[in-house]
Image (cartoon, rainbow, N blue to C red; front, side, top):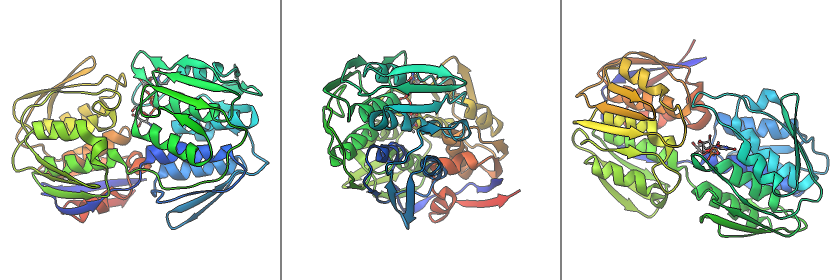
Length: 420
Ligand code: UD1
């Protein structure tokens, strides 16, 4: 296993570039199951989750070839229709094979994902979506077994108690692309990654309208063909880098990002006192002093993303006055708070709310990463803290950030990766 040793405090200054979005690439790789023709996906980030998705596809008999950052995927005639527990328990996004397998073969067996550090993550909306297309869904031996041939277009509302679901919208869209007739998804997720998946499906020959709005209409087609596609930039990585600039009172230019996907984050950074300039595929964040108090409440897109809540909590922990962060999307996504408090932060949790009394400086400590975005929050806290921080279990970070230590190191952070 690897850990990080981080020496702080440091001030970040310079230019960094943004990678392609993990959360766009994962469903797009799964969508390649919808055709027997090869698909080419460009600028694929080098991440553990992407390797896991490629491994899952290969375990199903799909051919994957990675050259530099271009992945070619061919899901020929012989495809195993099962996603096993071994892989699904490692990465929930394995669930994305459910919709395409069902759409193309009328048959899919996917292990139930089980628990996760950020709270219960049910799959009821995924099942509601495919059931509305006429699939018969059974739970057997810890696996969801869905069958239905042909699937028929249907109308459904995919909203849960915490709002729309990105995963359920994506899965239903993929299954419906090859169903007979028209499907209408109401209360659909509007995230940029859902739009990107729809655009990829359209490039494969699907007929989809309304993606990016709460009502998506899909007219099923008989077959889809291969496509050559470059997914969107990673708004969570770009947001993390922007917060890194703010927490170190630094100045960073983030190239290759899409500022339009980050409006809520840019707004809160400005409220906190940072200067944020936006340009074409470029963001410049400059912060000269401690952030002012800001209240942040996570919400589905275009609201403040839950995937940047932990990083923003770390920033506000070093701010002036009292800030309140409310987590509305995932029930218990505050594990990073206990670790931040070990670094001298003053944060109280009250249900879905974190009440933060800003402190002037955090202090280095030994801490433990609990999930992907929580790990990023600890890295940001550590580069701004006085003294040395050791972060264990950074395999969580490697799932979704490509060499974060190198990217931050190139602009002034002092981070060593140590195997133990
Ligand atoms: C995706 C992202 C994740 C992000 C999340 C919310 C990927 C690989 N992951 O996760 O990084 O944090 O969107 O933006 O893209 N829910 C149900 N029933 C369901 C499905 C979801 O109640 O069947 C609930 C969830 O528990 C959660 C809310 O709906 O409270 C939103 O979850 P969802 O949008 O589905 O998240 P994911 O697609 O798993």
